[in-house]
Length: 275
Image 1 (cartoon, rainbow, N blue to C red):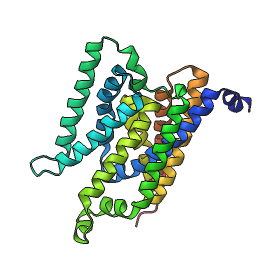
Image 2 (cartoon, helix red, strand yellow):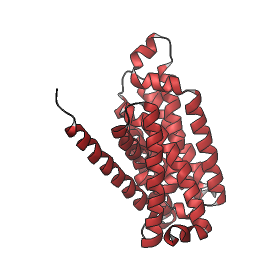
Image 3 (cartoon, rainbow, N blue to C red):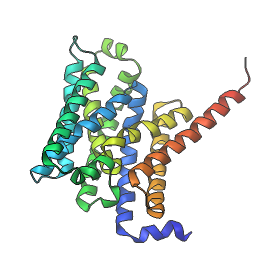
Image 4 (cartoon, one colour):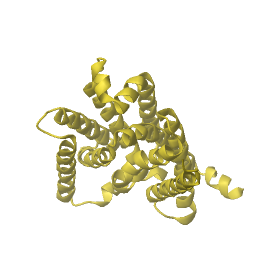
């Protein structure tokens, strides 16, 4: 079993594993709501809109993590505000902010003439996570998971039946905006692991795999977290031994676990006797 323990001798691997456990659990929990509400596009959109925040933070000597965080949260609030207006559909609001913010980031990069400086944020570099990054990821994970626990009933009810939620007096738009902000926080931590381009996979794939195995929201959250953490650690080991990009390896391991869950779900469905 030396192949399991050898990578743990390196501090960067231990930090990366700790980070992926926190990121995986956070993204899987929120990803359960994303899958349930059919909001898959929004994760990709918020991840891409973090780009100008990263670039501006870099050019001004600020922490890139905070730059991505500010851009992500502002985008989430902007989506919530625009989608509340009767003149605009939600997907239209997402599309406008997604393309506009990402184009702004590309424009600033082209002006700076240095794509290399931002490649870690575009493609992820969890093996290069610093103690400060790990601290920030831990804080955001705790805030996000505690908030979900505090407002679990509201989030669950508005996800399953927003009309009934409105009837009983729940502020559906407020709960939705809260979820958008939490998504922005989770996505920013995910960028550290797999980059802007692949972050939506951390939200969607583990939760989608879990939804094939479980029939209640709590079960999906727990199973999704397990899938996310296992695929994250497996991806890190693949990256360590094969010398490939860690972000891509993590996402492919997650996709493989979804394929396994899908195969078992399909087999179980066909094995049931017909009425």
